[in-house]
Length: 336
Ligand code: SF4
Image (cartoon, rainbow, N blue to C red):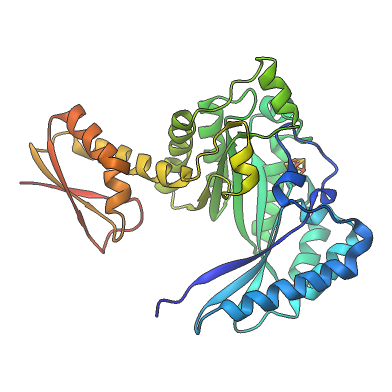
């Protein structure tokens, strides 16, 4: 049986963050709001979550405990350490480490020391944009120099680093987003997540939308912009961990924005479209497109959308085959 590596997610609600980014609806995302005083209860919940997940692991599977949802290193120090101590006890053969997400301005040398001492192996940073103008407009509360410093500090301290970025933020352009992807590569991130913006009810972004000051992303725009950023990661060997928010009731209820439940799949198809389109120049009329194992449907696209689009654009006839020697998103073509 194929072995898997999975995350055991544990959500830290909004009280970990003293900010209010205009797009953030953190309580809605987690659906739970616990007070800081409930640390002991929270640690019990964490232990139960880990133990329940351990029961679902098959032989040979491994997992990381993943603190997501808020800004983990910004919560009260005592609470953070209690949660880390609870998680740390499970590190062994099957739980390989702890992963967490946080803001760039909640990283410093002391935090790195605490995280290392408690078995944290991977940190995900909410970089979102490297345009200071966009960061200000969205009330992120810091500028890009802070993100850059945090990335270097985390890498110096040996953490695996994931850069999280957004597309379609208020005031953001496609160029800002491609720049952000480039910075995530330059600053040494090992992996990335791309979140096209969703407009949730009750957020300031929703107010701006109603006032006509913000135009939410359409699915097509979200796919196209996320694919441009994803291509930067693919070309530079930065692994893409996720594109788009996880589907949930809250996401389905969001009034506007990039809430298509299969957004990641659509973006992956778009990446293959671009790779194939770029490779077709100079090819003959009948082309065999080789794609990585298990990727034919992504390359062909939903309802053969990519195949039809490429054939119409180039006038060539395409067929698709797998080549297990190809890494993700790489293709090669042969002309008959
Ligand atoms: S930093 Fe994160 S949790 Fe805090 S308001 Fe912004 S998006 Fe929400």
